[in-house]
Length: 523
Image (cartoon, rainbow, N blue to C red; front, side, top):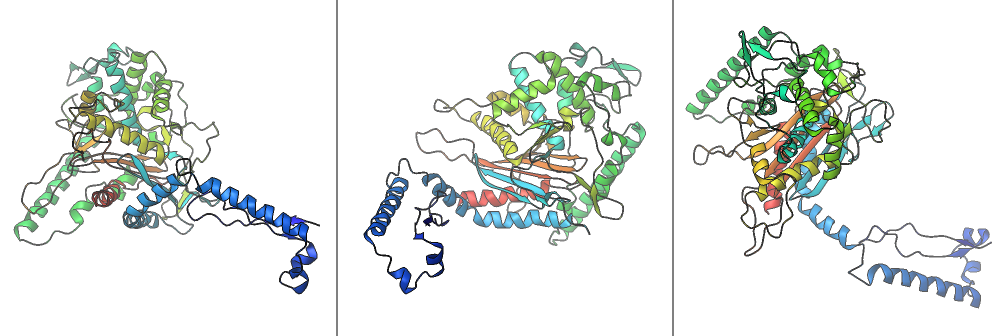
């Protein structure tokens, strides 16, 4: 009987199989390869057949290697060269994210996370670490779909910006113009106005998950006192000319205890399905304001639900349809609402630590009450696309000659406004920054020579039941431009991390990773 065996060996330069190597053996001959009996296989017919096989192999090899213009090897080679350039940054960054994953370990195992990095618009690293499903030992991959939590807010702000550009949405009118169902609000017995612009910057005064206004104010005063004490301690150390420790940087993000306390709020665990965003307003529309609109920063996911109702009426279509159309236009095909019924391939499961510090499954929740503020699923690949689309729009605004470039997703003026810090705002994950419209913005600053230098970057973090996330954009300090040519855009580093466990601080790690790749980029 005649059998054909092919080698699984791959070409060293190409993902395509190498030219096949053929041998013809009978079962008995196969057992005696190299024996004197097998060495006599020199008949004319066999020699002719072998010659044909060699000819086919050579022809296949020539097809894959003779024409450089059509060769499929060119892409992988270029990709390998780019990966080599960032290999050291990838190793260092992998250690950083593995520390996070090790920190989430418990007796029964560890959950997972996925990290993605792009440099100058090209994705250079995507990797899953740990498990998307602990019980079934399903590993995280770059395609794993997770809750992105409050990264939904930058997505919503971009959609609102597009509506403004189309003349459909006015950010500076009362929300009741679009949503008459939302009651006229009062503060200290006087009517006040809430605008979409206030909501985008968390200055609306609408509550977050805590309903007790007095408790919110007490917590804020306590946080301010702690911050002042840390600043005083920092100045004291500097005056004594002692080296700074890492304690001040660690305090930029909320502590684990603060985050766990946040997840004690009942509204995180709602199981009711809301048919539309207007119906979801029932949760908070009759509650009193915590602060007078426009005066005090108060981070509020509920306020973004009101914004989604405004956008829905301004656009004349369902909010989810509006967002889905934007995702399709951006190429974010894996970004979808966090609905429980649909079968979503590569969807992760979600975990948290119980009181004994063990990893357990998160309870069932329905996030239809907060699509705009924290209700979407996505992948690191999609989030990198989004970050680069906004970086491109922001940087094209800085160029005089854009003749050779396609327009940005947002108009230049819109992109600049989106990342412009707003007075009276703040953000918990980096005290150096101010909130803009759906983004935290840290501006470039260096007060003293040879001292701390602050880079300009924008980011947003997220925390939901069984999920933590961050999306960070670090624009290049100076755009590289060849003489007489329009510079390629975007220029900078985008980092995103998504994890299937709640209460994990990711912003500082993302910033370190961004700087690692930025250093490698400049070499």
